[in-house]
Length: 320
Image 1: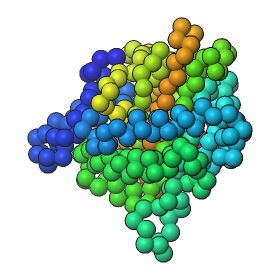
Image 2: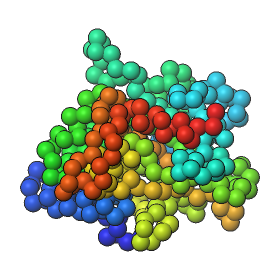
Image 3: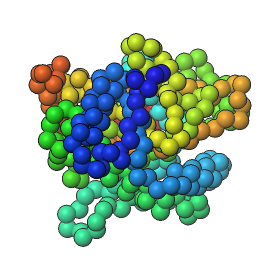
């Protein structure tokens, strides 16, 4: 997949405030999101070494027996550990796919309470493993993600010729979820069933997704109309960014909700296990998302309420 289809955007020039640099980046973003819905982003400000530290701690947790992880099991729609067989993501496209071959740990903010003086909400779930110490690492990571997500939304607003706060005025107390996707090796999962993936084909549901991923034979693929399924480009210094269904609807389908999948564990790399850090960023729960009119928008979708829409899509893929 060519750099012209999915470019790498260095955010450093964006932060200088130089109008020419900002306009150049905004044009590249607009063109990329029209073609595939994906970007690579460098100069993102995530602390060096933090994703690796999270992976080390999370891997120690995921490698424990199921009985040790069971006290942290997430109920449907809640946060914590989800074991094998919990979701079949491809079903959101109307295909009865087998369950995805992964385990997850998910975190989200506690409900906003205007009576407290906390600068930021506590993390859900309420129960975390004491060893490894995942919670402080993820708290640091989501702080960096929140800053980056709002910065990207400002860039997206300029790319559409809208005011800088066109999206961020709706992220005062936003919904977000951080999910650690652990993709076990085939010698753990066993041979995949026909049509089974680590994550089935889908588009994300919210506004923006920021992904820190690892490359592999059983890794991320992106779909475009011109090229079909292709391995996603990878840069160890970059984060992968894609827009979801809410943003596509907001832009009246000017931008594509990036369709993607994660391949099944490969038989010819029996020890390959991967882990992705996936930050899903939506907006304030009661935001009504309405399609921008022409000439920006191309399709007028019925208005939807952000949280209700995302939760309805999540319900389509949950198996328990």
